[in-house]
Image (cartoon, rainbow, N blue to C red; front, side, top):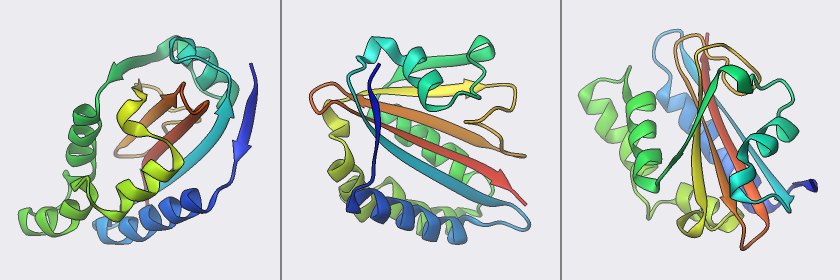
Length: 160
């Protein structure tokens, strides 16, 4: 499988946006840490396990659950995971720009990968591994665009 790490301006903008958002999402001692990785690949969406293992050799696929989801599913996870420790007022103020598909974050993401025409997978593992290692929360998504020959990993974990 061909896998080439891509560094494009939109990826840096997306990473910067998420880094800034993590400061607002901080509650008490917990802070969200995001990682976004973009690859050019010849892998097809049905090769998701091989793609994950090639990109994150420390992933524990034997105990992982990888499910195909939708953009709505991705938004639901973002809302649940990132908003779970926020007050109702902060949840509305902080989460609205993240969940608004017309916002800057989604523009940057779309410049990286056409997420609306891509296959989206959610990665979950009850054991800590290279993708998921938060102390109180974590999530990971893999977005695969066969049309663009790209895949994007979005991972987030909490730490103190």
